[in-house]
Each structure stands twice: as structure tokens, then as C-alpha cells.
Image: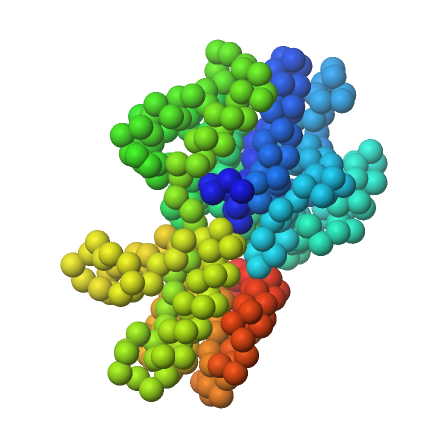
Amino acid sequence: MHKGIRGRRIHFAGSADEDVEPSRLNYFHKLVKQLAKRTFVEGGGLVVTVGSEPIHQSEHYLPLIFDWILLEALDECQNSGLVNWPEPQGAPVVAVGLPKWREKIPDNRKSLWKKVVSTKNIELVQVRSELGVGGVLRERQANFGDVLVAAGGGPGVEHLAELYVSSQKPVIPLDIPLKTKKLGSAERLSTLTMENPERFFEFNPPECATAAYSTLSLKNEFPPVDEFERRFFDFLSHLPRPRAFFARLLDSKSSEFDEVEKFFRNVVDYVVKDAGYERFEMGAEVSREPFLNVEIFQTIHSSSLVIVDLTGLRPNCFTELGYALGLKKKVIMTAQEGTKLPFDSASFPCHFWSSKLTDNQRRMRFQEFMRKNINRRPVVS
């Protein structure tokens, strides 16, 4: 599997103007579908919007947005058994819709929707009716997405880019000209990315970021789809994997330390790595800050997943749990069997692990708990 994709959802966002050159739009449809299919093959997933599909003013077979093209890719890959998403991450595709999404599905897309939604490969998230605005929809999408790839678009793309950048998630604007009335937001963001790439993504090695990003330019030429696919996935392979932050008992003098250590080393490490994350655990990783508390909170802020084990009921673990919940992070809560959680934390789903089971049994149980709970709605909408 491609190390830059497994367990990560790519969010292809943007739109074209209704009078854009048809051949250009048709090329991008082929391109985005190819990228989506390769994403599934490599163990990745997608974030999409479910609802309407505006079309070109003269070429009615050409949609101006890409979500239903992406769902076509899902349908073709699942029919061929090519979806290789890690189960602990939930469903590979998260479709977010406004309250009236069902009524807006075009007639020619209804059969496709029935096919993709009938499998375990898609999770539908409906924005609450009292919050049915585009900004809230984009916030929910940004919670689920790991990489934003934008083309064309307007203020919505700008907002998504802000959301992803603020969470330190990669933003990859493509400069293909899809807007005719004014410069597309993705084109404008592409210029900013060339000037200051570290603002939009972390690349290894950093000195090669601008040159590598320039190979994704579609402003003046449209390379063969297969060639662009190769460049795109090579670029992604240089981006760091999403981080999982571990908050847990670290006092080696505690009577519970040995069992907590075994649970994390023999169970959590295995499941987290298989799901596509790299771990961060205080004491196990190199610290970059002079003060430990600064490192902790900065790392939680930039992590995609926070796993909090409350065995031992340490105050610092509860502090880190509250901070992660307040940031609307994906949080998985665990504790050793027999742990009596305080009232507030007891109201959240918690995986109570046993020292009496084999490691394989414990991995399976932890994977299943993650799958069911990793995409839970944030505590504060």
C-alpha cells in the first residue's frame, strides 16, 4: 500500500463555471476519477458532499462539481473489490449533506446513490436542521478529511482551506483554470502555495517542497491522466502521515504501569499503525520544546486522533482529554477493566481492555471499538 494514503481521506473540493471550456472540464473529470480510484486501491478514502449536481450550460453531461464523479469511482472500485480501507477508521467515504440533501439528488444519480449507500463503504452525515448552512457543512467535512485537494471554486474553497490549515492538515490547490468570470480560489491559493508552501503542507525534505508542488501545475498543459496520477501520488508520499497522540499513564513506579505499557505496545501501536497513523507519545518521542506542557498541547492541536487511556485516573490525562474534545478531535477513550471513571467522563464511550485476553483478541476488540466510535459527532457542534 502507498504509505502516504492508507487510512487518509482525501477531500476533492471546488467547482467550475457553467461556461468553462468543455474539453478542460471533461479532462478534469477523468483526472479526479482516476485519482479517486487510485486512492481506494492504495487504502485511502474520500470526503464528499451529497446533494445536487449543477451541469454545464451547453454540455449537459458535464457536471460543474465533482462529488458524483467521486461516487462513481467508489461504485466501480467496490464492484471490483478494490477498496482497501483499514476497518478501524470507520467507512472509507464520508458523505456530508445539508438537511434537504435527499430532495436535491438528481434523478439520474438516484440509482448510483442506492448502490453506494447499501454497502459498508459510505457513512452519511446530515447537518442538523437548525444548522443547515454551508459553513457548518464544511466544518463537518474538515473534521473527517485528512488532505484537501481544491480546483476552481470560490469562497467555499477559501473557507475549507482555512479549516484544513488551522488543523495543520495538507492543502493542495490545483491551478487548472475552471472559472471564467474571475480567478478561481484554488488558482489564487496555488500562487500563495508556490510562495510559501510550508503554510499549506509539510513536505520532506522541506527544501524540495516548491519544486515538487510545481509538478502538479495544470495551468498551461494537461498531461496524460496516468502521468499526472504518478506525480500526484509521488507528491503525497513525501507528506507525513496523520498523527495519533497517546495520553496515558507514564509513571513507571505505578502498579498499573506495566499493564498499560503492554496494552499500548502490543495492541494500540499495532492498530494505530495499520490504520495509517504515526504515533506520538510523551517520553517515547523526541521533544522539540523546552517545556513539556507546551509540547503536549501543540501536538494535540496538530494531531488527527487522540487516544486517551484513563487507567490510574491521572489528572493530566483528563486535562488532555478535555482539550482534545474542545478542539473537536477524533477521540478514543480507553481504560483497564475495573477502572471507575468519574461522572463526566463516564458518559463517553470507553473501551475497557482486559489483561486476561491474548493480544490478538485485544487487537480485534480495540479495532472494533475504534471502527464504531472514531467518527462520532463532536461534543460541541
